[in-house]
Amino acid sequence: MSKARKKYQVDVLVCGGGCAGIAAAIAAARNNAKTLLLERAGFSGGIITTVGLPFFDGIADKKTGRIVVRGIPFELLLKMGRTQPNATHIKPHNPTIKSTEQFKVLADQLLESHGEQIKVLYHTTACEVFTQNGRVSKVLAANKDGLIEIEARQVIDCTGDGDIAAWADVPVEKTKPLMPMTLHFRIGNVRQNPQLHTKAREALIQAEKAGKLPMFYGPGIIYCFADDEAYIHAVRVSGDATDAEDLSRAEMQGRSDAWAMFEAWKESVPGFEKSYFINSGPYIGIRETRRLVGQYVLTEQDIRSQKNFDDAIATGCWYMDRHPNHTTIGTANDSGTGYQPAPYDIPYRALVAQRVENLLVAGRCHSATAAAASSTRVTVTAMAMGQAAGTAAAIAIKAKTSVAALNGVDVREQLTAQGAGPFT
Image (tube, rainbow, N blue to C red):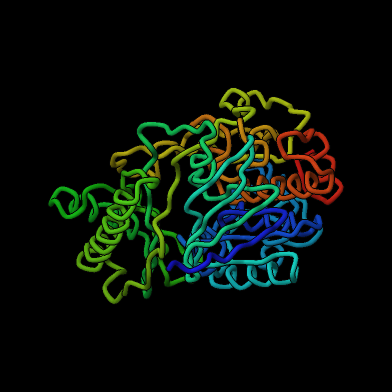
């Protein structure tokens, strides 16, 4: 006889506790919605904590350094000690936090500070979606309780992969080929010297020629955590992270490649003689999978022309950062000279699903073309979209309507009143 499933009934369900999901859950709770947050890892933070990327990309205009995203993203950066309360500009335009472990603790503290308004389920993955009469009626998730059932008045997909949207059978798309995945890793006791980057690249070229390394980029060797600790961007693995077998293969390939790079450097690059491999991951970084085809699809031309939207709910400013599925020697990616836009609007309608009235999508899987998403996919921009989605869901609860029926202008006005929303 099967065990009875544990059941939850909430106002707002947020699936995914990454950059978008944290902001969505906090925003929904602060606007008086009873919120449940699901996250597959044992902590929230997404690419910052599950991958180890410490950059707050998208918070400031590269040309001027002017801060164009405030709200919860700015609050998080402030609490991490990387800006001042009244700051209007910041350098560099993509500041780093000094500890991804501290960010885990901060995220927990903020979520817990809302008491019963937010319930968090870590080690929990949404696995099935039921729809009825044009609504998401129920979501099944798996964790140590087995399968659990969740009924929510509004649902926010912050999975990064658009899982909820896809399983709800709303329009989504995938670009072929997808951008490659990257496993980030850290090496300790590295002695910096003027030739280190050049020699490191040469060693990877030789490793690739010898068949020890199938593909790489850069490498990007960054000293953002400590002067003798190298944080590495260099692994490049093709694959589709929405396919379980392919994702598993990519994780294994990423670890193998990272270790091959470490061995090549330790063997032949001055500065790495006494180095040691600290850690990787714990998850490979995923740049692109599914994207929503929502009520509006943000385009590259919208970004280039700085198209104004009455229902703008967030501002993007990152460059069009698209990685190829091949080795690019000597550069971080093939878009190092990619188009750098001025700050631009992201409309509320780009978060709103078609066909299902109570579903929003925030983060890198929102509704945008591949080129546009190569700019909007970054950490701070995802947080801003998450805050907008959480705020909209709470407004819909209060108004006894659905997120699809909301006027995005009302969402914008609420965000502005709370010190968030689009740059002005």
